Length: 165
Image (tube, rainbow, N blue to C red; front, top):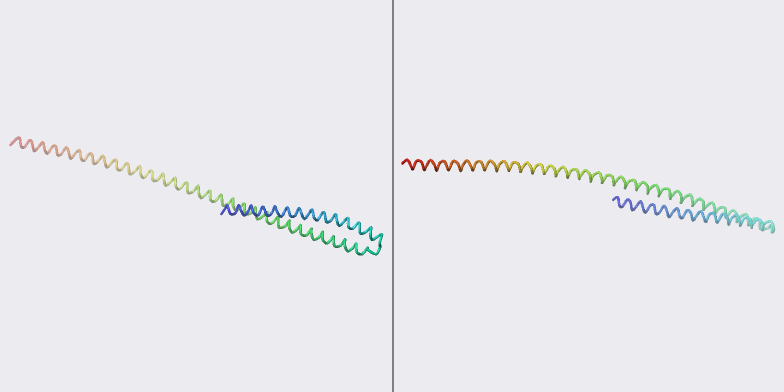
């Protein structure tokens, strides 16, 4: 899931970069359009002064160009806002992915501690069983030795009785 979040964050960052590139293009177009508008306005004013009757047409063209520049500036502002929102979302997702990585690491560490504790308990239990088994084997050996001694004594007594008869 954290890989998915990282991929989504990377995609969001790529979209933000693309939007920033688009904003830069729009700025360049706006600057070009503004320069064109300024040049057109100057040309139209000269023509209006020379021709008089075309002054109104030049003013309308200048208004249209100013409106186009305004539209481009509004589009630039919208793209900047969208890019900022995408950047904030990418940062939020990256932070969430970092938190998820920390949580998974903590869970892994806890599981490793539990495994170590279980292995240690198993070793202690095995050692205890081994000690108990060793003690039982010693008692069985001692019992067998006593049994052998008792049998030998019984045989000796039987032999002594047979010799007395």
